[in-house]
Structure formats: C-alpha cells, structure tokens
Image (tube, rainbow, N blue to C red; front, side):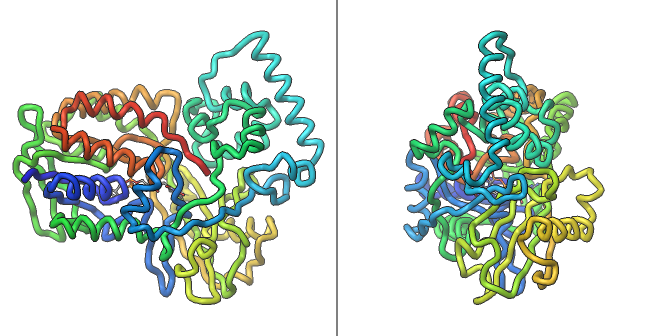
Length: 466
Ligand SMILES: Cc1cc2nc3c(=O)[nH]c(=O)nc-3n(C[C@H](O)[C@H](O)[C@H](O)COP(=O)(O)OP(=O)(O)OC[C@H]3O[C@@H](n4cnc5c(N)ncnc54)[C@H](O)[C@@H]3O)c2cc1C
C-alpha cells in the first residue's frame, strides 16, 4: 500500500486525502497544526453558537464539482436562494446591480457619470490603446473612471492595497467580464459570470464539509493528526525520503513516503526542507505578500439583523468589506431567537490596528450605526478572531516570485504543493475540490511531476463568483 503524507487539513488537504483513500486504497496521514479541521473554511464553537470563519457558500462554474460536493456530503446540501446587496453612496442596492432597479436605487447623476466615462474609456482605447497591466488599467479601460471609483478602487484599497501596484489578473479573477456593457448584458441574460442566484449549503453550517471529509478519511483507515507540527523534511536524490512531525510533544517519523502533498504556505514549507533551499528561492517566497483578516462577531438577542445573507461595503468610509449573517443560511448555527453578524475587516498584518481588537471593534460598531444597520445598544456581545495570511496580494511581481518558488519545488519529484497557501492561489472551496481531484488522479496514475505541471496550468483560470 502506498503512503501519502498531507500537510494541512483545510479543504484542499482533506479532499485530496479523501480521494486518494477512496479511489486508490492509499494510506493517507494528514498533519494539521491547529486543533480544528477546515482551515479557512472552519467553524469555531462559541457558547451555543457555531461561528463560521467568514461566510461560505458552495457554488461552482467548474463542470461536475457541485455534483461531487453533493456526493461527498451524501446529498445533504440544501439549496439557498441568495439575497445580498451592496451599500453605495449611503444606500442599500440589490446585488448584482439590476439594470431595471438601478435607476431607482442609484443616484441618477452617478449613473450618467458611469455611462459617460464608459463611452470615453472606449473611445480612448480605440484611438490610443494602452496596455492593461494593473488592476486599475483593467477597470479604467473596461468600465471607465466613474464606475472604477464607485465600485472597484476603494474595495482594492481596503482588501489588497494600492490598485496601481496590483496585477490585472486579480481584477479579471474578481470580475471575469471585460467591460461594463458585458456586465449589464450578462445580468439581463442571467449568466452566472459574477454572481450566483442560488448556492448550496450544509444544513448544520459549513463546518460539516471538513468534518464529513475527516470522518470519511478515517473510515478508509487514514488518519488526521490535529495539533501536529511538521518539524522537518529531508530530501535525497530529488525525493522526500523522510518527513517528521510532532503531536503534543510526541515525535513521529515517516521514512520513504511515496508522496507528500503540502497545503501549507510555501515559505513555511521551504523552511522545513533539508538541505536548505537556495536563498534566492526563500527570498522569492518571502516577497509573496498576504493580507490578514480580522473577523468581528456581533451577537444579538433577536432572530435577524441584515435580512439577507450578506451586504458588501466597497467604500472606504466603512471599515468592513462585508457584513454577513450565517443564520440566514442555517438557523442551526445559533440558539433559537438569536443571531450573529460577522464584520470582515481586511488589514495588512503589519498595521497596528491588526493587533488592536478593541479599536477595530469600536470602528465596526460606529460604522454599523453610520450605515443604519443597528444601534450600539442592540449588540449584546462581541468577539474577535483573526488570521495573518488570508488574501494573497497579486502585486505586479507576484507571478515572477511564485514561478521561482514552484520551479524549485517541482524538482522534488514526490512532493506537490497545492491549495490557497501552497499555490498562492486565490481559490474557493470548489477550486480546492477540483485541484484535489486532479492531484489525486495524477498521483494514482503514477505521480509524474511533468504531468502535474501540465495539469496545474488550468488552475490559473479559476475565478471567484460572489
Ligand atoms: C472570509 C472568507 C470567505 C470565503 N467565502 C467562500 C465561499 O463563500 N465559498 C467558497 O467556496 N470559498 C470561500 N472562501 C475560500 C475558502 O475558504 C478557501 O478557498 C479554502 O478554505 C482554502 O482551503 P485550502 O485547504 O486551500 O487552504 P487553508 O484553508 O488555508 O488550509 C491550510 C491548512 O494548513 C494548516 N497549516 C498551515 N500551516 C501548517 C503547518 N506548518 N503545519 C501543519 N498544518 C498547517 C492550516 O491550519 C489549514 O488548516 C472564503 C474565504 C474567506 C477567508
């Protein structure tokens, strides 16, 4: 029986482990440093609540992935009709913005400005086309100055940083329609290029996804070791010949694993390897920057607050990018008659605010009142959870750095780096399943690195559908 060690029990690691165990009768061992499975898609127990680590929906435009999701969840996923909106110029507007409702919801002067600057942008591009290199270039060329400022510029500044330094690839992944006209006609044609109308969700909350995968792996005699820290990976003759980890002080060594799948951050992976990787490779991994996420949970003694699944706040006058209410997807995540709202605040982990829970919470409460969502007295309790490396920053140099790192890692023939942290890929959980499926199938077909490098190219086309 072949032996595969998987670092990290997020959805990428769990699904890959499950697929290998199920299809290939492989013995899989997952090594997870925290005490919970699910990674970014985990849920945390708190009093009588299950707190989703940010709102998660299940949706995919990748062929076959939703069916596979239902299969692994034993067809228990429920269909939820999505209700969400976007807060613009002090008003709540249905999202995606409806061309029929927009004239009644958005200031007509803003609409005229958007239309006029779209036409101006098209004329400018026709007369003197400019290369599209940055996030800003993409939106200015396709949408015009006014829409860019209204919808996309501040959001970038809040979530990833200066849009002039970000690559157009990020813009394309987030808004996979090239211009305003196609966006509007796409909405008329009800094409799910940007926004799903319905999504799937586990009846007991998103935690069920990771928990089900863990149970299934264990059912195939695989193991998921929580609170386990990898301590070293030794490479010999271009292969991993030993991997070591510790679980609560107990040391484990796996000699000559057939395969290693890493879903941890590439920098952390490089730092585990002996002999030490070249300094230039480590430096390139160090230049891959991440934005952190601060989640402020707000608890209420009433059954609902937002009246919808989530609300986007692209403008900078609000500290949060989005508010969400998981009880709108599954009432089981809170006690009867109570609810909680999550405020997502994206920050650079070096920003002093990142460490100051009281200051972030205060801003969130003030901004909730400013937007008319609730009064400070309505909030019964608050809680802060955060993580440093959540959003890969696709700056204009990121691909060069990533290629340098992956090229070096690809020389280790039996080790594969995947997942959001392992490929610096802005993935969603449907992408985790797609990647895991393709990697497991490559491994089961012999695990040739050159095959994998070909397969991996398709992941660049993943796009995020809100
Ligand atoms: C706020 C928010 C909302 C989202 N909404 C959606 C949504 O609606 N729909 C959707 O499909 N996706 C959504 N996503 C994306 C989704 O959460 C990710 O795509 C997915 O969870 C990534 O899984 P992963 O396994 O690739 O990485 P991770 O979840 O990061 O998994 C990596 C795992 O490795 C572990 N680890 C790290 N370092 C080590 C180490 N040294 N040793 C051992 N273990 C280690 C981590 O603890 C973690 O468990 C959202 C993400 C966020 C942040």
